Length: 206
Length: 112
Ligand SMILES: [Zn+2]
Image (cartoon, rainbow over all chains, first blue to last red; front, side, top):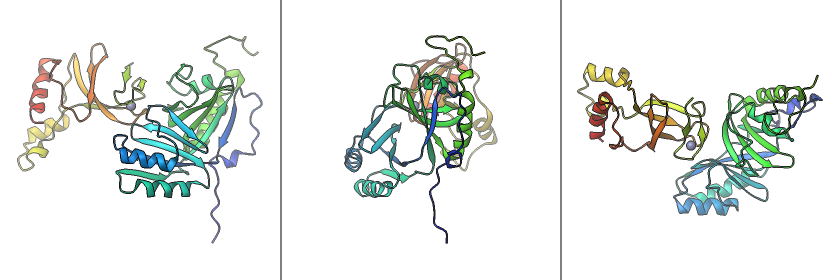
């Protein structure tokens, strides 16, 4: 039997040279494992168990996230969170969660290989991503920790604003869409394709 | 374009960010009396929908926000969303849609 080997969704493109004229930097974040967690915030037993297992409070505010050490918890819905943790530590975290949650009405599942994360970073990150979504990423609500599920380049995605300076977004897409979204970003992130709807206008490249 | 605000999570967006589930408060005849469903009642249940000029009660899903369903009252003339209420709630009696629609709405909400 051959050994199972983890390969990230975009590993086959890692050695590819990116176009020289990209106005953002693109990267795959492949070292994060993900756990899907569902339960009701109205159930104090669930909240206490999840908080104890994760070591960080569940973000109750829509479109927010919380971080503590290696663990990030993204708000997905009023009763759903996506927990990300370094790859390799997910089984330990999951069994801790399952044990703590016990028989509360809840659900925790390892979904590490369902999605991949594409990191888009640079001064033009907001305007590049806005080519693919109706969500206003220039809005002041888009600050570090902000999370939003959205339709991105016509596929379901989630987006987290990681930090500014430079503006950095993590785009979570289903693994089977990874290649398509990567290709899409390579096309729209060319310097010659800048929209520059906001801020200082530069003369077009000739 | 429709401007929609999810009453569950507050996400704002247009109709591409939401999924429309069509007319709300349609009751299934077989759920009340499975052995006595007339062809007419079954036809109405499956195919006959209101097409009001004015308030229309619809089901919507916050497809790109929290994934939850909710009810909305939409004005079909101005495309304005007038009010929202929970997916498990029956039709609000307050605002009265057009006469044709209110007949069915009343009949249906009486059973709930
Ligand atoms: Zn919502």
